[in-house]
Image (cartoon, rainbow, N blue to C red):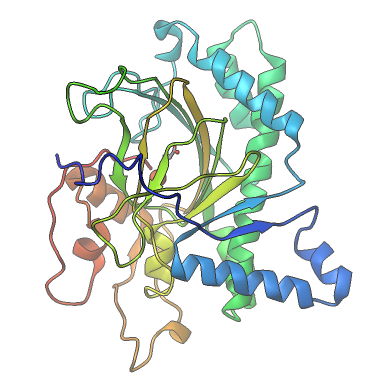
Length: 348
Ligand SMILES: O=C(O)CCC(=O)C(=O)O
Ligand SMILES: [Fe+2]
């Protein structure tokens, strides 16, 4: 396992990633407001952010402060349950079952919940019923509302990208071949610094997400760091404004776009004295849907970078190898990918 040299980035300046306020609007409202000018502008900016940074922050009125508080409170209750209860959440799929004890990421606890986008009520109901047989209606409602909103936002971001690339026609195909998965995470407080071993403080190892787009919400404890595009030596903290979400581009979207968008490497570093809680909605292609670049992304200047593949194949390759550069090695068509055997904890 390698922790990048700049593991202690406490003295670094926060890195500015684009920030958007989506306000109360979805696509229809934005178009209705002025015939589409604002919608187009937002789409362009979101595309630019995905190409240049592979991530951006945003706020939306669609998720109220009350819903966020309900979610954060529910997560505290969830992770405070006895270990035996948490261990009841099991799934045959990788990285879904309760993770509570792992030497590679000793401060992380997590659950993964598959949901059938956009109908997420049943998944929230089933999950809370296992954790609280006597019921926890407040959290069940918060979980189901939050995950529905996040799937909606994730699809909105996909739609913005399709619009910006003039691929609106593909919208219904994308919606039909898309699934989603919700991950609930708690990062414990590491031993007081200076920690004896240099892994202390690493909440989640460096990785790119394997899916299409991830949206993350957090409590008031920061910790996300990214590696700026074309700078493999630096790690910079991302300060997510209160009440905001961060959207992160994953490898499947990068492959589909023939490398137009950037799947940003990121990790979590813990520095504070408070637990960090996060929840992530992972939009991903359905297992058997093929990921291949539409013709418009491929020409003489932009030769095809990845062969077509299914998400299930790619994921199972990643899970069995945990290669840092799984996408290039698995599907890359260019010669000599930079093979790198750094250990990873697969997270999605
Ligand atoms: O918890 C976080 O802030 C990041 C989580 C993450 O990157 C992931 O689950 O893929
Ligand atoms: Fe991630």
